[in-house]
Image 1 (cartoon, one colour):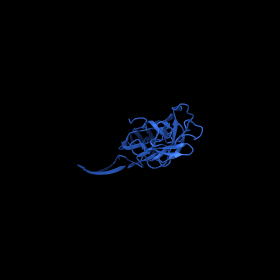
Image 2 (tube, one colour):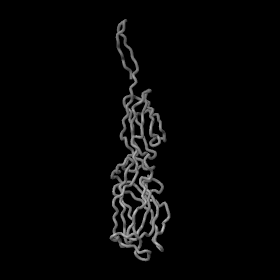
Image 3 (tube, rainbow, N blue to C red):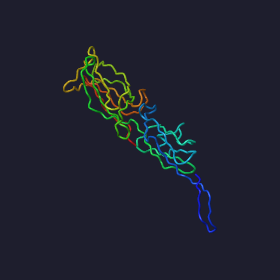
Image 4 (cartoon, rainbow, N blue to C red):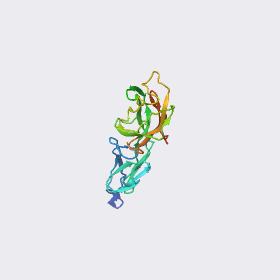
Length: 267
């Protein structure tokens, strides 16, 4: 910017032109973006755009804090642009609000920092389970959860992909049992009040014979198997690990036991 100045000296009126550097300002279309361990999820903002105002470019952008969690295109933490806009993408888990600070420098003048937050699925909080009789398997147990983000908020009611993984072999608890192992499943569900449905076994030829839910429920254990839950993908090994646990089958119901969620404590 060129500013014309006018003043009075001992010899009379003097005029001249001097350059004036303007501190750029930053605004962000949305200060919150979501990370699901890789691929974006429909309905959740997976990137955002910063816009510089107040002075023409070129623009030097810098992630001053949180470069482990977000990046510019081509996986960079600094970038030069001739346009006043730049996109920001998440790249890994972040567990604290305000961990990301970004500035832009134009003509030697640096903007104030923009603060951003990366959200992710973080933990599962249980609701009361429901047990029902079933003519095929003796019983069906519904183990309910709400999914919470890394800031302790329940996730929005927007469907997310999730899947279960078995991390250990099926271990018998009942002598002579021949109940079969389950097959790991995946789905796309609302993160609010979703459930894992666990069945008993076929009514004929299996030891022990499955029962409809009793009152009170029995304590007869049949088998158990360690596993984990991931939110953000239906593909094994992808998404965010939100819980480790053990599937425990009883003769008349099933539960998740030895639950750990969140899996990693906040830093």
